[in-house]
Every structure is written in structure tokens, then in C-alpha cells.
Amino acid sequence: MRIAMVSEHASPLAALGGVDAGGQNVYVARLSEELARRGHDVTVYTRRDAAGLPDRVPLPGGAVVEHVPAGPAQAVPKDELFPYMPAFGAWLERAWARERPDVAHAHFWMSGMASRIGAQPHGVPVVQTFHALGTVKRRHQGRLDTSPPERVGIERQIGRGCARVLATCTDEVRELAELGVPARQVSVVPCGVDAEQFRPGVPQGGVPARRERHRLLACGRLVPRKGYDQAIQALAGIPDAELLIAGGPDAGLLADDPEARRLRRLARRIGVGDRVRMLGAVDPARMPALIGSADLVLCTPVYEPFGIVPLEAMACGVPVVASDVGGHRDSVADGVTGRLVRPQDPGSVAAAVRELLDHDALRRRHGTAGRERVLAHYTWRRVADGVERVHRQVLAGPAQQKEVA
Image (cartoon, rainbow, N blue to C red):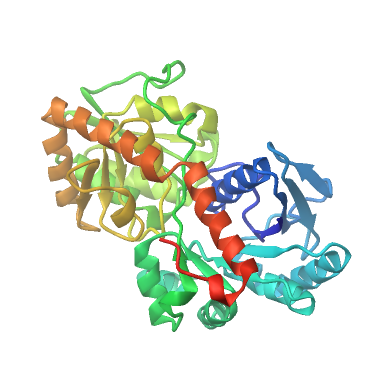
């Protein structure tokens, strides 16, 4: 198949940890690589966000990233990219007139908008992965939601009009139904993790030395919705543990980062400032070792469309304490690979952490079970199996379009 991956803001080439660079970038990169290794012709279309970027950049495995000129050739926050999507779509239309893809796979709502513009004149079917829904963001962020006001309406149009929606978790199927997207239009295919990179027993050279008896780790983009404040508040009830927070800008720039300053003020105010270490951006190659150095990984967001960090932790054999939200409900098996706790409840986080820290054998069993769960359901090979199956069904026509679980 000739597959066009459209990811307007989340380039597979981007450095991870920035405000707009996280799980979607990883998903697009690894899925594209895996599909290319299977012999598919995969091109990833992403917005040119720097003047010096080459037009085309190869990815491992044979996929290619193509930089689309739409808007200024500089970094622009993703919530400010909406006005440039018609130009992005028009560019796709011209490109696909020269070489028509068999299927376009759009990532995020604005990519869906651009893909529809590019695909419609050529009859290219569009498969949509939202990665996050505007209705969920608006519900949890309220007036702080910086998404364009058109977002929810456009998501509704895309969901109803595309060939298939790929939801990353069962919770998203319910959200899509409330948007009017029928279940027959939706297939569930989760995100994945590199179980060879993230594995137990990775040498821990270069990992910060432990200061307390137990180590807790939280990692990801340094933005308020990730709920690092919940982990910090929970630390007040876990006196023999330290908390490492990995993510955000480089360590030398943390002093100027608003979220880092907010979290440090909170830690000092509740008396745990000496047990919270903010590491800033961590080289992705070092993340398996850092995760492996922890007794538990904490994932305490207010909401989470899917969440790759729990998979990375489980792949490393480290139990997870996670908010009972979104994709966590699928990936974290409560009482088997870790604990699901009430969101925005630091007391529940602290209680779950203390229980697991007090029982070494239980933690080991959870860690082993987490690794087994990843290998069974969440490798990139498994994810690519599901995506490839949907692409083929879409190309085969309506008679073959059965829901993929």
C-alpha cells in the first residue's frame, strides 16, 4: 500500500519533551517505521517549522518525512496552526495529484481537516486518529482551553465523514459516540512501546544517584494537565521516598519554565522540596535506565487520551500508579500491573504507593505482569497489525469494514 501519514504539528523528527512534542510524535514515527518495514510505501507529511529543513528526510525502515510549507517556517504552538490548514490541505491536494496514495491516515484533528481537503478531489479514503478530543480538553480545562472554537465541530464532521476512526482506547469510543460517531465507524487500536528498548535490566549508568530509600518517577511533557502537582502532594504522605520528574526544557532552562517554577513552589510550600528533583529533558536513549532505577512510576494526569508512559514503565518491569482516566483504564490492569487511583486525589496516590513500597514481592509480581501485558498487547508490531488491517478493510470497501478490537 502507498500510505500517507499526515501529522501537521507532531513531526516524527521532533525532539521529545517540549510542550507540543510527546506521545503523538512517537506514535507516528514508530508506526510509520513498522509499516515501511513491511514493504508499504509510507510518507509522513508534517508542517515545515524551520527554514533550514530539507524537503524530505528518510526514517529508519524506509519511511520518508516530507515537510509541508504551510504558515511561517518557524515553531508555532499547535493551537495557533488552524489558520494554516487550508494551505496545508491544498499542498496535499497538489502532491497527491502527482502521486495518489491508497489511503491517508490523519493524526490529530487539524491533520484530519487538511487530509480531507487534499483527499477529496482524488477519492483517497481517510482514516482518522484523533489522539485527543476537543470535547475532553474543554471539559477538563474550561476557560484555559486554548483550542480554536471550531475544533469540536470539525472533529464531529471528520468523525462522521471519514472512512474509519481509529480510537486508541475504549474510553474514546464512548466520547466519539457522544459526538455522533457510530460504533461501526470506529476501530480500537492502542498505542505501543518499543519492548526491546524499554526492557528490564538496562544498565543504569548516568542515572542520578538515589537519595532516599525509595525512588518514584514521573515523566512526560511538563504541562499542567499531566498532574505532577498530584504526585508532589502525594509525596508528603510517603516520607521515605524521593520523586524525580523528567520532562520539559533542558535542565539549565527549568528556572525560566512557568510549570517548573509552579511545581517547585508547591514542593517547598508543603515541605518536600528537598525530595523532589526536576531533571528537565532526558535523552530518550536514557529513559529505560531511568525508569528501571525507580521502584514505581507515577502517572497522575487530570485526563489522558492514552498515555505511553505507563507502557514504557510496564515494559521495563516497573509497576505503575496511575489516574483512573482515559487510556489508563485499558493499559494498566488494576491490582495486576499496578494501581488505578481516583484522579486529583493525592491521598489515594500516597496510599497506593505506600502499599506497593511496603511489599517488595508484590511489586516484583506487578512488574513481571506488566512486562507480559506489554508483550501480549502493546508492541509496535501488534499496533501495526491492527492499523494495517483497518487500512486494508477500508480499501476493500464497505462490505469488508468490520470493527477491529
